[in-house]
Image: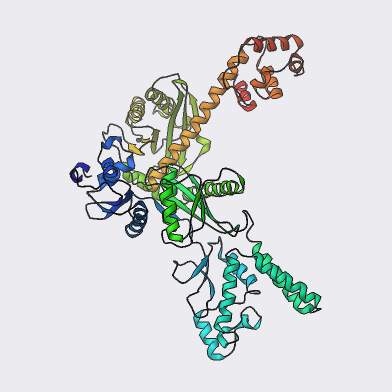
Length: 633
């Protein structure tokens, strides 16, 4: 671990203009690339008090041993150079984009004498026009098969083309009319090129022109009683329309935009991009983004756009985003230079574009959920995670059963604890437990009480046949060193000091062990840390759910309990009828009397009670919450 002060640039040596900087480790590898409007101010922020930095930045500056920079003339050049260096060095502390699948494109080789259409997944090449990406390769092939009726261009490989040229005989597609057979000279290079241009124009979104032309030709053929040609044109028209059915018209015709949706948590973010050309969604792609840096959505959007369009390919006229990128004017100018015409970055406030953005965002949320489920369901990943936890915490064996305790309270009141259990890396919800604790102002004391209550049945004096569970291989608590030490002390008092304990501090994602001054740092992208985070987050979810229900039930119950003559069954009946305390407050005597079991006298008492009592701010409890409360009475 290096000391940043040892490689801090001397005062006055860093320029104040825009530029791009690189942090390197002791082997000379670039670990981080960044850009700045003012290099001196930006670099100075990395050499301030390390305790005030977030964990990711602190780790980066202590990993690096040197920093260098390059000045540029403006911020647009800085953005471009940053993109090139990230592509070249792949720094470990920059956000990394891992495509969640390899998407197919329809490529038209315009750089060949007789261009061909083909499905590719390879890197883009100059002189080749790409359409897509598409979700499935079969969708492209089916679309192309429909379009070849109208645009019978070449689709064969170079080897097949040369073989049939030598044979002087076309392939099957040439015989059935889905290729004009340039290999045997049925058409000239210029005639074939015109067909290719029409296909590209159609796929580019200019569809109405071709449909109108075919409709007019079909009507004219029918008028001339050339019914065979009219039938052929009718089939061509149907083929075009079937090809168009694969994309829905979602925006006004002529719209050329990419729509970007984000869904994220503290560890990863899912990105979905819909490509809209000619008002239709012509392609879709997705990324799973590892959040190496702790950055906001604006920076995430800027860095994503830099990676998407840095090669200058397929830059749209408009980019629709959930939030404006940081330095939006610079990014817009950079994209404009790449495209050669103005590019707008838009955050829609209403209309069809906002609706489409919401759809893309939902797709991103689903992609993030599927990614996490896929990772959690992977047996190999779970086994690796348990082995990494064993090695990182120096355990005697892999913790096949992990229990986690979390505390939730509101200013020391309504204190509750949750216990979640994972076995073999999977949640075992049948063993989940929750408990209400005595009110504390100290989470540390609450943690000790929760551990004592939960593990007391596992003491040695309890007979084995009376124990409800076996000892866990690891106890995880939500918190840092104080919570870990309190949990370890509680286990020691119970004679269960053999149960390993660790804590996961949420802000910095550090793993703390009892009695240790420094935390254990598991690799940021390790499966072991990912599993501990999942367990901790599940315990927090389970605790906060119980805490909220307990607060709501207590708030509602305290009011209804004060009404004389109103027992648990009548409270149930009232809340079942009115749905909430708020609705009951404004009910009349006749409306309350209509509830089964409530007479006129009791109804008058209830109405008079609420008339004399001002409503608490914001109280609006659901029927389910009140029924849960009365079930406990």
